[in-house]
Length: 120
Length: 103
Image (cartoon, rainbow over all chains, first blue to last red; front, side, top):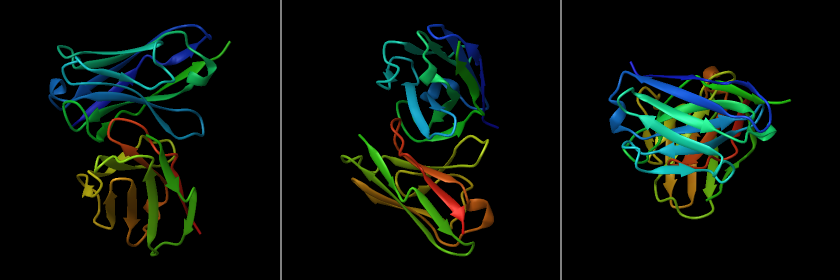
């Protein structure tokens, strides 16, 4: 059974940092791209960042470019999102999602999300 | 690329047919997906490649279109279909969502 388990969320002050993790189970992690998608309270879905299966390609939404870094460790079946210079508007539930392909595709499996709250 | 969904809210009764629209600001070919999200839950993939149903999705759900104009049709609404629906270009931006509510 495919499972994605996010961790690392919490309360952080503006300007602070957090590192989210996404542990993958039930499929060959190194064969699929993955992404992070967030949802602010009461709002819609926002794609944040994506990484190819090999890790050689990384992509970011304009709202986080230069502040967030996506990475993956295929030996540990785990993806990461390093979030720096956090702002109040980064407050959201962060989901990791598995792509259907090595570089792109629809998101066929999602984690349950981890809440990030940025507040003083 | 900007995806615009319409309507913002759709009020229908169980058994009725629902048609949701997604328009892209430039062509995405058929690289479009539809998701369903219920309160407190992660999104679920319904349709990929504009018209292919994901595993386990009932055949009352169908997708159509290509290029810039897409539709998600639910042929006969079941009580569990009332939710928010999002379109997405592959690996990127989402539409703002359509809330399907019980009339």
